[in-house]
Figure 1 (cartoon, rainbow, N blue to C red):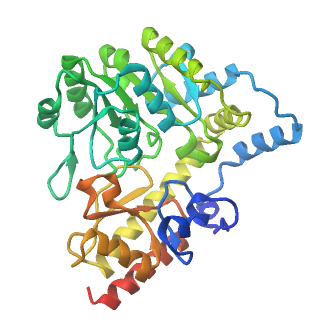
Figure 2 (cartoon, helix red, strand yellow):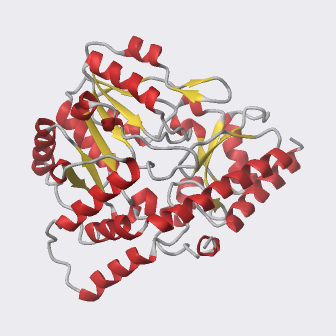
Length: 392
């Protein structure tokens, strides 16, 4: 059924950030956008049908919470991760980044330290700094081929002011799917120093073959009691514009404090389409997801083979999941800023520039693989033409 993902769908003129904001973000309109993490694929038919039914009803009053959504979420978490979650542990929100911001506000004070593991999803920096908390970096250990958590540096970075760590799991942009032993080591450190854990698991469903997602909160009882697990169907089923997410908080005291903070911030409701789409996606979307990840993994293999054959000074990093490819560019005779200019002005592609993920990303670019193969090939052909023209 890969044909559904081969279809090239026109997105220009649809108020798409990815396709309609290239001039605003990159300075010109003639770029092929392969940057922001949304897909160029339609959501599953069952999700579209449920949304059509809501539109056809024609009344968009204040929505009430549906127990059907709880059951769909619980069933999904149990089927996918063997994780049994009680319905009262779920809090629904409008997006994971706002949720992380609210958690930081509710459970830390200005000047407290919050740890992130870099290079990492760039809003993590702002969500800490703009709440007047001190950002502490625990850079991933990189041996030139593989990324690991640096547990020794993590312990050295923790002080009496350190209150929280924000975990990216699976990791964006490096594509690691953290293993049981790694999560157990991290859990032990968090218990030792009494750190709260905000685990962003939005990419949990997007795994390559042979890899398994283990929720951080499922590691042991202590982890469950100190973790806010942030999840959403938005990355999985291309629903980011509907703004639907949820957080699993098994510790009742923490859950009530967060719920009160959301209520006091008037941020404790979702839109009329969010629950409808979530329930339909988690109830009917599993086959679509399986086909999607088969397609994305083939796209990854295609890029790897293309780059190896035609642009040997670039290197595709190993990936275990997500639909985001981490491209290593250190052998190009360009600085990071020169490389960015070259990609925009000569290759005419819009990628996510590595330094926005932190200084550890200065030799990298991030490419979105969630597009038809024809689109992907066009982007690679543009880069190759610019690569050959420079004589790299």
